[in-house]
Length: 287
Image (tube, rainbow, N blue to C red):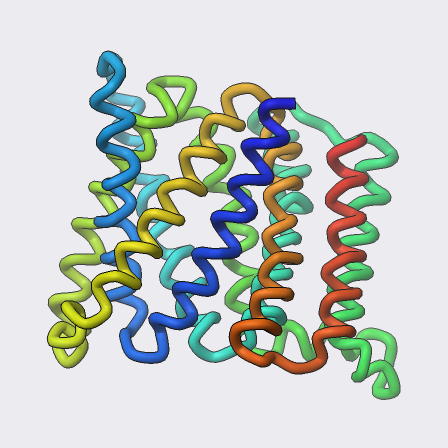
């Protein structure tokens, strides 16, 4: 049950971080936000990694770090762009597709295979995606999926869901070769370097705003750090697709937060859609 509680904490941290990130994007661009996300997450990781003996790391680990860090950097950039151009409650629920991709990827690389109940969960997730655009039903039964993928924000988040499925598999392997704290710290340092370079190169007009928005950047980093540590420790003690599935409850939190903090509309339709998707996630978990 420990992994389940850790996964729920990861979901809550993730949804809270999404709210802070969306608020920050009103004034700052994605490169400043992502630099802050990774730099200030080290405030969580470094005390944790210092408190334990540092493990011996192989060449394979460093190769995995470069691959995973690059995938994560792309995924985080696309996530921030989706937040900027679309409603939080419309984009974030699409992360629920990640367990669908994991059923395939984890089956190949981790030898984890879906049960009949798990397949029913996949169907529920796709039903939820339909309900997100149910107002388009009069234009054809497939029109909601077409509208979903033709809008840039949701389309970006769909890509992110696939990237997170790949990266989750890689991260579980990397954590087995190190520890959750070491992996989180080194990955954050690598991405901090990437986004610092991108920020200096592409975000010059936003740099002067950083001092005023420093509390928001720090809060975002702390929430991100809490989310990753919770998730990585859950990875060590449970099947990957189970942890990822429970973490998808962040989509429900995000719908509620999007309505409460940003006044996003059509909350009833989107909340129902998110709930259906979460039913699918629970079926995958139970399967």
